[in-house]
Amino acid sequence: MSKPNGTADSRPEHIQVGVRVRPLTPSEAQSGESVAWRVDGAVITQTDTAAKKAGKVPDFRFQHVFGPGAKTSAVYEELVAPIVQDSLRGINGAVCCYGQTSAGKTYTCQGNDSEPGIIPLALRDIFRSIEEVPSRQFVLKFSYIEIYNEHVFDLLTGSDDNLSVQEDRERVTIKGLSEVVLSSEEQAFELMESSQANRKVSRTQMNEHSSRSHVIFRISIESKANDADTAMKSTKLVSQLNFVDLAGSERIARAGASGVLFKEGTAINKSLLFLGIVISALSRGLSHAPFRDSRLTLILKNCLGGNSRTAFIQCITPARSCSEESISTLRIASRIGNVTNVALVNEIPCDGSPTNGERRSESERMASELLLKQQDLSRHNRLLQIQLHQYKTLYMRKQGEHAEQQETADRIVQLESEVQALNMQIDDISADKAFLEDSNAQLIDRVTELETEVAEAWHSAQLLNDLSSGTAQSRWLRLSHHDSVEQLEQDLYSALRTVIAYRERQVEYTR
Image 1 (cartoon, rainbow, N blue to C red):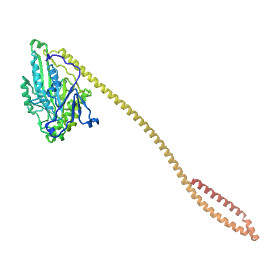
Image 2: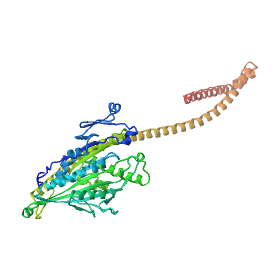
Image 3: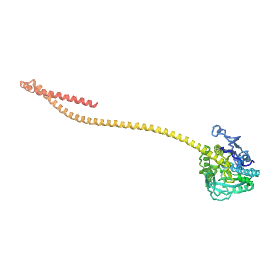
Image 4: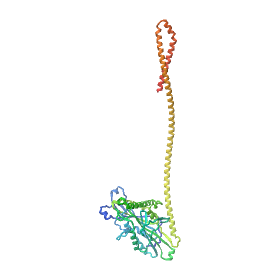
């Protein structure tokens, strides 16, 4: 191993993602479970050709894919070993195992006697690498963290105390977390085994030894030069190496959970949901992600989008009955690959003065933060421009609606005026009608009188006519009444004209 005093490339780098497909378990094979996934190099595809042709599930392509026949040592060498080596050079590292329950996460982390997991392989690699650098003095500190039902526990002590998580500008710390200085590989294995006994596990329908909590196996590494004179003039390298064994996501109904198991499953799914939200926010380039919504995401804040080299191992089962959960795991893996970190060498000057590397790291960190903020402001600006355009469009639409409403109101006023004028005309017509009806009644009375007078005049005229052919005396009487007859004729004609005029007025009124 090269001397651990190099500098890290401070450019953003993507989180490494690997997918591991375990083989069918004996119980799955006995129950007739079929294989739903096929590994072809870097591509994972479904064996269901009908679903594939329908385009329901795409092929998934990743840089690191491990099929059912792959050994844990191959996973370690390809994904984990570079991160472990960098941690000895003062660079933070994290390896997270994600997947549904019974997908092989704990097996990948812990392994067994015949096939060690990535944590035992990392411990052996660390101690062997330290022996190859006698010029530097290393101090390894071991701690074991459990997150159960949103409570943080110390697995080293086995205490039931809920530890508080504190966040400052630079890092997240767990107050009261114990650390043990490691002196050998054997001591580390013993502590790991004894601490594992304190972890919460339960039997479910999906897994006989289902982990009911998230655990973080943490090694803090410090190193400095052995020579006293050189040590005072050099820097101390510090880093944290985290191995995260996430509890498996599960469907409550399939797991047969009730009571305490139901509460545990709900808490697990909730914390994994918040982890997915943080990953989604970071994958879209947002500088602010909701890390504080969950203890898990807050503790892993530095590993996600921070100062760390991080890898995710997505574990899936090939069983067809778990296809939906496997698809969800693969889709999350695709988003994780878009998250970027900026890993820096963590140096502490032994004489208390800042080093050039520290100044450079701080400058680069601030530049990176400034770039992220500028990108975030640019996105907010674009969003505001879109909102402003939408507001203007809405305003113009409202203005048009207001103009239409004003036009409608004016038309209503005009119609009301017309209605009022018509009402006045109706009132005038009603008054005229009343006057005509009154006049009609008077005319009827007058016509009746005139008809009576006419009848009397005709009667008198008839009498006079009879007398005209009589005696001289009758002639004299007729002559004496001549003036009266003429007057009666005039009255008759006048009455007739009145009657005719009345009939004409009645006809005109009817029209």
